[in-house]
Amino acid sequence: MQGLMQDWPLLIHRIIDHAATQHGSREVVSRSLEGPIHRTDYATVRQRALRGAKRLAREGIKPGDRVATMAWNSWRHLEAWYAIAGVGAIYHTINPRLFAEQIVWIVNHAEDRLLMLDACFVPLVEKLAPALASIERYIILTDAAHMPQTSLRNAVAYEDWLAEADDDFVWAAVDERAAAGLCYTSGTTGNPKGVLYTHRSNVLHAMQVCMTGSIGPSANDSVLCVVPMFHANAWALPFALPMCGAKMVMPGSRLDGASVYDLIEAEGVTHSAGVPTVWLMLLDYMTTNAKKPSTLRQVAVGGAACPRAMIVRFERDFGVDVFHAWGMTESSPVGTTGTIKPAVGKLEGESLYDQKAKQGSAPFGVEMIITSDDGVRLPWDGATVGRLKVRGPCIAAGYYRQETQILDAEGFFDTGDIAAIEADGTMRITDRAKDVIKSGGEWISSIEIENLAMSHPDVAEAAVIGVPHEKWTERPLLAVVPARGSARDPAGLLRFFEGRIAKWWIPGDVQYLEEIPHTAAGKINKVRLREIFRDYRLPDDGV
Ligand code: AMP
Image 1 (cartoon, rainbow, N blue to C red):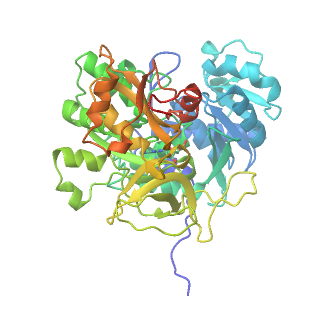
Image 2: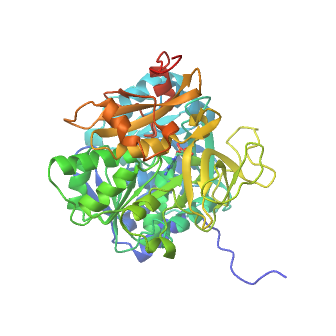
Image 3: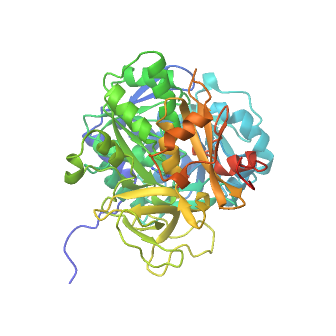
């Protein structure tokens, strides 16, 4: 027997409708690319998104069409997402930090019809435009006064374009399983893979993110959306914040420590979310300039392992709680969160930091398992490590326009990460499968060594890779960016590891670098690091 409840499709436009009626005057504050701080609210964002949707329809955009955005976080980018999804089309976020060939490849693969871009990306896109055959029109996210001279086809200033429509529009009534968003994973090898989110998966995922114990924003919070909208849906914040009525603060292109700190102070920011590299800049700025945030209570850190030393610094030096999260483009992206369960709540000091350095537990809607390479399930004992696999309504079932089967027989997606899970469900990532160091037949966790290295006062950033070794097959090499003004003492640094990790995990050597290479998504670029040290031999190799 069927139940007798309403069928209310989970469509993205319902989020902004809700925000406009329940939290209409709640602010959306952006650092505009033109310079000044811009203020709007959810009611206005909705109104302008309706105009945008109507204007897109007049442009000939139909349900299922792809409309690309290449933009920093701002109110215009937010309106564009709701307008595109609201006309039934698909917002396709492009990471401007990708290599030019990758951008060309994904625009052509997606067959985007329009590209909405910030004015600062016009020079870059002008160079690529001859190869972007599907783009019919370029909409520059600015007003007439700031519109640059450009050769881009049918280029128009967003504000002029928007002014050509009113907000008398009815959102497209698409199926909740219809595609709404597209984001290509920035893989370091092979062609990028398109993850195609649905209205339903985005709404459910935003609800997961809103749950208490997850990032859990509320109407009383002011949230700085540091994570860019071109990184895996900005961790659902553009949906979760309007859903709960939190004030939304958008940093534009300025993610340096001083700019982020100033925005936090000016807008009474209580929560934020971003990758570790951004937080390193903020911590560095606050330490060097003896600043302390007055309203910031919590930062969510994810996208790459949050170094334990970062948790200690935020909490001990600045009184800011760190919330570690793990996820990937394919999981919408939030997969696990550092939810504090009762047993964890009892922990204090160092043991609490140890716990928070783990990637956390799965919210409702994410099932996790670990398996051996041949698919046998492994125990949740906190020690056994295996391939991390996930299943749920917000996890990719396939890639856009690719035939490859990506789920196993039980519907689990192999994340490519190696992890251990404890009996209570807490997960700890030890490595990316392709970064695992195999020494003497055993696995060494590069993340654990990096964590420890980062807790040394002479280390600003650390990365560990495996390098070939005649006797042990592979041994860890530690690459370090020294902390400002610190001495370079490789032997002292290696001594620091003694008694803290197994002897055979201690790196074979330390090499100093000016900077650690990062990928377009802000992760340590281990492929590049391995290239840098391709001809390197450890001092004890062949001895
Ligand atoms: P992306 O799809 O580009 O967001 O990359 C996802 C990958 O980033 C994951 O598969 C992990 O390897 C890594 N990652 C994300 N969050 C974390 C985290 N908290 N700890 C360790 N690795 C992470």
